[in-house]
Image (cartoon, rainbow, N blue to C red; front, side, top):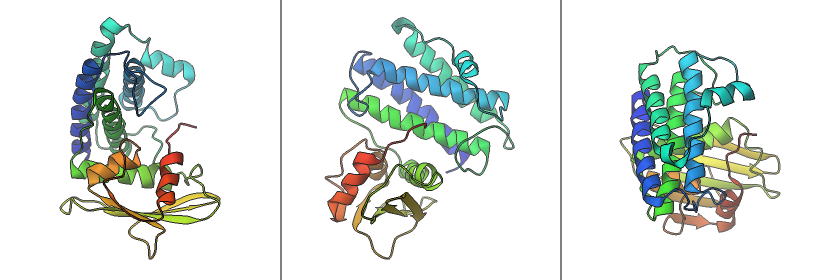
Amino acid sequence: MEIGRHIDALERAGLDFVDAAEKAGFDAPVPTCPEWTVRELVHHVGYVHRWAATYVRECRTVVLTDDEEEAAVGPMPGDADLVAWFQAGHAELVDLLRAAPGDLTCWHFLPAPSPLAFWARRQAHETTIHRADLQGAVGTIGGVDADVGIDGIDELLMGFYGSRGGRRLRAEAPCTLSVGVTDGACCAGPHAWTVHIGPEGAEISRGDPDAADCTLRGPASDLYLALWNRRATADLHVDGDPAVLDLWRSRAAIRWT
């Protein structure tokens, strides 16, 4: 996906995020983030937007200290001001990314063609996945366009697990999960990935394996949400040992540390 497309996806996801938050109410639990209420999830995403914006705005090349991060984000607002606070931070991030030069230099934490490409992509998917969380608190999670789904699968697998070695995703008995998108033929980017899971962690590559213990196939939107553990896989094509997919669903989680 192009940077502009990521920024458009970020903008749309933020608008849908607010809509779902207002429908759910701040005290509602978030089924896909069971430790959080809607209020806490709005705090989290609003915080992340301001944190990310700081690196882009200041062309910051080193990680913020805890005190610097706290100052950049500012205090959490009360309920009466929470939606406006979120909207302000979201709009600023969108505007900063749109205005940033292509040769922007700043800190980022996953491989990317450029720092600007990283932040546009990461914030698009951060907001889209948490938009799904809030929609789940209301009732029905909306899908995404095929190009967004394909890109988000690739970021999850190749970025978070591929580039970081997938150390948390382990299995005593080595196994292989094959993931394939069944739509989006006109979309750029890979449409298949191979996840090898072993005692030392996971190794991820693009493309189909020679053989797999479990194969997961489906539309890009459904696979995107399923691999991020935001929807079930019962209506997707699963062939082979379902325990391999269960392993992914129980152990695949993105954490900061």
